[in-house]
Amino acid sequence: MSSQGQTIYFISGANRGIGLGFVQALAKRANTLIYAGVRDPSKADELQKLNSQTKNIHIIKLESISEGDAKAAAEKIEKTSGYIDVVIANAGISNYHGPIVTTPIKEIRDHYEVNVAGPVILFQALYPLLNKSRSGAPKFVVISSLLGSIGELIPAPRTTYGASKAAVNYVTKKIHQEHEEDGLIAFPIHPGLVQTDMGNHYATSVGLDEAPVTIEESVQGQLKVIDEATREKTSGRFWDFEGKELPW
Ligand code: NDP
Image (cartoon, rainbow, N blue to C red; front, top):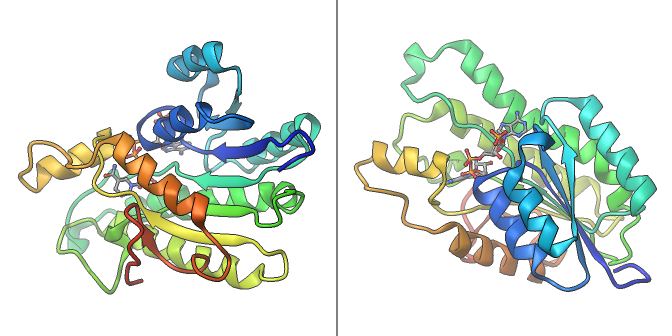
């Protein structure tokens, strides 16, 4: 909390899907400011419309794989707010589905870049601002996936995606381990199978009409986990949107 009592969030991939859902839910909260990272601010119509009512959203250009965008975002936030309390690294892709034997190596690289390097770039750029959080317990949350669980190993041909989420889970646990002295809370969370472009695409591929979880249900569940998260009980562990712990 700042001297004005304002809690500040940064959310990547805020243009649509789960990221937009987070912004919509958080914008309703009092004393809350949201930095919404999107690839093209000029096309972020929903966010612009929402902000014309709530006035607590800053739309920021952020291509996940661009270190320049992340640094520019950090500089802007340093000048306007000076700190961040919660980062939600949500942007992600799941563009290729098929068995490993025929998977184009470019797909492995592309998924690794967006889903693993992306959150690392974001963490490196925003860590100094998280470290200035007045909350005493800044949070770095990565939207991961059950498809990244090696323990569960779901039999879906999603190796490009699953491997990248397993890798970002490792990275997130390392962030937890390396930032004990800062009191940083860092953990990955599975949002459920959610009614977004990505979730519905997966759902129909396994014979469902649509994904079972609404964006609102997913976001409310995840926000409960995030709001209640502590260094001792939550950080460095893998959760789902209903607060259940998942195997790595
Ligand atoms: P969507 O495909 O609906 O939205 C993805 C978001 O990520 C969009 O805002 C998109 O921006 C952004 N994005 C993609 N690539 C980049 C990039 N290179 N740089 C910046 N932004 C990018 O996905 P969801 O909302 O469903 O997924 C959100 C997160 O939740 C992802 O990390 C996903 O892996 C995870 N997840 C989702 C599940 C589901 O069932 N939906 C299940 C498990 C995990 P743009 O609009 O510009 O394309």
